[in-house]
Amino acid sequence: MLPTLSLDEARLLAGDLDGSGTCLSRALAVASRVNGAKVAIGVRYAAGAALSAHAWVVWGGVPLRAADPIGEVIAVLDAADDWSAHDDEFPRSRVT
Image 1 (cartoon, rainbow, N blue to C red):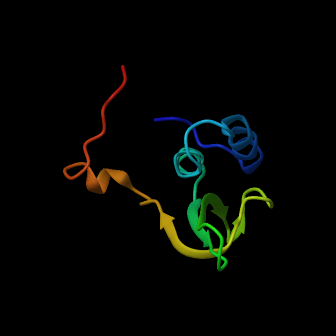
Image 2: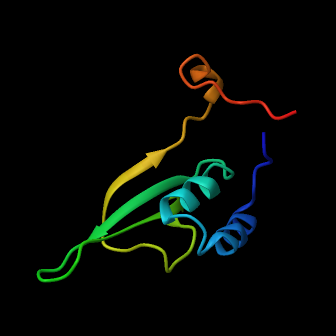
């Protein structure tokens, strides 16, 4: 299991990951390393404009990075505190 990150370390990781993968994959990767972090998904739509969606990390009800939130939050993903309770449903691969 990877070590838990502080909020400052998580912000640095989020910046390092910018431009890699999707915003959702980046937010999930960062949130998985911060105790109590959640992933918010927001959408923005204006008449005559394209739908825009974005995912970002939230901790303590505050976005990890102030510039991340866009639009109206439509979902918040909250990680299970103890994944061992779900080992039968979602087996994890073990790296040795």
